[in-house]
Image (cartoon, rainbow, N blue to C red; front, side, top):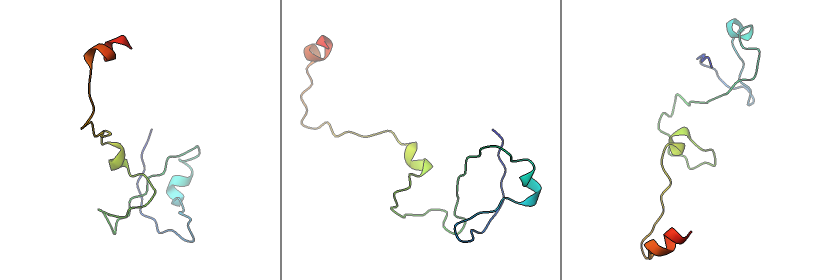
Length: 74
């Protein structure tokens, strides 16, 4: 995978690829949007941020009874 970086301003929800990259980028691409105005956005949107994916899931186990024999039966 090759990465190309450029600044763009969306127009009506569309981002244009610069002319110098259009002949290079001819297949499917992965798009990651970084808002340069808000580097640490605290927006609670429904979009999953990459930083959210790096954290392990947490589980509150207080109040659970763990029995080694039952666990080994499975």
